Structure formats: C-alpha cells, structure tokens
Length: 358
Image (cartoon, rainbow, N blue to C red; front, side):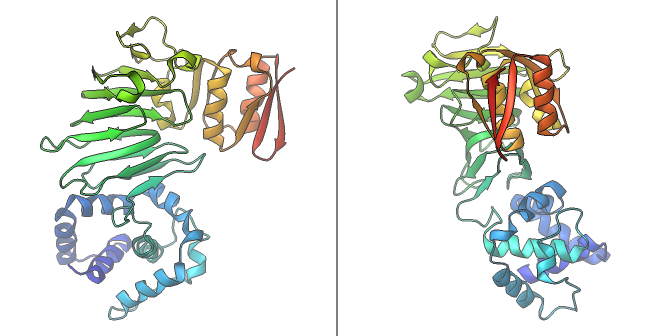
C-alpha cells in the first residue's frame, strides 16, 4: 500500500470515519508487519505523541509540511490547521488532522525511529517515554536515557543498547532472543518483564526481574572474565563498575554475593512505603527507602531535571526515606529538610540546588 493511502486511512481512523472496507484495509496494513503494528500503537499513544511533539521546534517543519501536502494533493479536501498552531499544542490534540500532521513531520523529518538511520530514542531530564519496538516489545524509557536499536532489528537480530534506565516487556520470539547491552552487562531474554538501570555516570548497574527469566553476562572489561547469571522473578543483579568505590546506595544487606567480587544478587522487596523501589518510577513515584543522600540527590536530579551539589561531603552517607508523586521540587526539599534538620537546601540558579550542613 502506498504511503499516501496509509496516511488517508490513518486520518480516517483517528477521526472515526473509516468505512467497513477501509477498516479491513487498515487492519491488513497493520498485520502486514510487526513494524507497522508498532507504528500504529505509538501513533495512538498520547504519552508518546506528547514527548515527540515537544521536540518539534528543531524539526524542519516547512519541508515536512510540503511533503504532507504533496501526499494529499490528489485526495479529498483535508481540513488541516495552520502549521504554526501545531507546535503550540501537546495533548489532547484538537483533531485527527493535527495527529496526521504529527505523523507526517515525524516520518519525513527522521524523527520516526523505525525509519531513522540511527534508530534511537532519547529522553531529556525530567521526561519519560513509552513506545513499542518493531517486534512488539513494550519499552518505557526513564529520564535522561538513550536507547538505540541495531540494523536488521526483528529480522536478523533483536539487539539494542541502553544508557540510562528503562522498563521492558519483551514480546516472545524463540527464534531471535532479545539482547540488551549496557556499559557492564549483556542481557539475553525471550519473553520477560524487567527493569534495567545503567546510567554511565553511576557506579553500579542494576537489573530487576518481574516476570520470566533473564540471563546476564557481565562484560569482561569490568570483572576480568565473563560471568553468566540467571535471574528468576523478583530478583535483582547489581554490578559494581568500580567495586572499591561503590556508592552505598547500591550496597545490598543480607544479599547472596557471588564468587566474583563486585556482583550481588538479592530479592526485590516492598519498602515500608509499599512500593518496590526499582520500579516505583513507572507509577510516577519518586521513592527512596533508607538510601544515602548521595543516591537521593542523583534521583532528584533526573526526576526534576536539575543539578544538585552536596557542598559538605560528610552529608553524603546520611540515610533518607521518602515517597513523592506530584509534589513540586520545593515541597520535596522542604519535606527532606523537616525530616533531617541538619540539611539545608539553597537554590543558586533556576536549575541548581546546593545541599549544605545547617
């Protein structure tokens, strides 16, 4: 089916004007490939559209607009709002035509990851992104993260690279295992749900398994030799990238430590606040349960898109506990200062917070 025909069917689908025959044609296009199905799912996902629309200021909109018009030149009249208005709206979008415009800009500008040479997804600090990969696997990318997929994905391989944090619900495909590479780990899975935290600037990487089974190979450059580990549901694997200087935030008490120094396996447990810390972010909860201030400050940075500086190093090991959802940054800092009176927070710029000893 030609792109022009797909665009017209999508427009009618979004406006609720599909005939029975057109519904069949659209269904056939969706079922023609897993990539088409993933694109259709993403186009119907408000969170995904919102995150992409937020980036349109850097897109060559004039060029994309002209391409959309060339696709529609032989079609019936389409009521499309002026181009400039699109970039001022996020979600909910005013009409199917606006979503259609998004689709065209996304596709022709290279923003559409499946047609993008780099095949990558990125989130800014304070931003999350939910999307479906061409094989049907669901991904939720946390703040300040970058995920890239390899050439031939879902054809000859299902391999991706992750810097940052993401939750995965992997579509089963026995013939092609799903592989994730981070700075210190290689994860191999079939049909599994799990969370991976692997920010390059942090001293440890953590894989937390919720469902299924995952095999993890620790990269040789980090441990001197390759080691493989199998996780079962509600276990987590912690890999210290710098074992001698690991942050206390990722030390696990009463854990079963493997023979290889710097690697620990432990069980996922609900905190006293009722959430599993490793996946609380999926519920839009900022949760830290008996964690050192150094770790909490790093979480706050990514959550609110700011920079924190602990001016007094002696404060770093102070243990903190808290749970927040929609609270603004000021309320979080106020609550922490109330529970730990020795702390003092001072904003020196719009995006920088100093943490001092009172």
